[in-house]
Amino acid sequence: MDKNTIEKKYQKLKKKIDALDFISTGSIMKVYNTCGRPGCECYKDKSKKHGPYNIWTRKVNAKTVTRTLTKEQARMARQYVANMRKFEKITRQMKDLSAQYIQSFKKKSKRGGG
Ligand SMILES: [Zn+2]
Image (cartoon, rainbow, N blue to C red; front, side, top):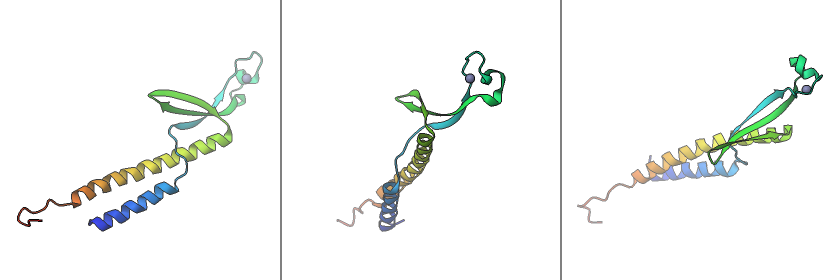
């Protein structure tokens, strides 16, 4: 690829990042619980477990952080995690293009005298 093509592709990727909404890491799971209260139906009947609870798990400074989210928050978190994957894909492409861009600048010929 020549410099112009690389530059154009790179600008496109930057626009894609600009169009991305919030980003987030982690995963969101639906979890059903038993409460342990004596006499509660969840204890006897698995179909009467409490929930679903939206459990969001992510790493923060190498530690696993868990939060319970509302339905709306879970919807947001899923969207932002999907955005994060797009973001990572785009930045990977940007890195590749940057490497190609560096290499598109050839060493100047010693004979050329420029
Ligand atoms: Zn219960």
